[in-house]
Length: 115
Image (cartoon, rainbow, N blue to C red):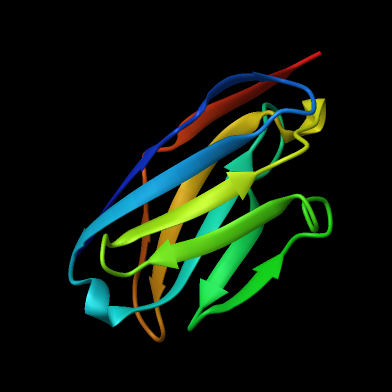
């Protein structure tokens, strides 16, 4: 089992920055892919960024603005979000997936970008 707890969400003006954190615990040695996803009202959940063995991948909508990273000593995955736009408003979820097994999700943290 893996437990994930997100933090760092909040209200920010357009153009501003936020850093989300996802603290993990449990059997994290089994995790192959770390990720961040988001779900805006009335929309499906979408993948924002993934981290696999130091390799990163981003959705086109956030490329160049968001950065995913992992601090293995702190068992924490981060999402640095810069140049935030109104359309970035969503609930952001941290995820952890085993290579051929289970996936785990955090409870989500709200990010609201205002004009």
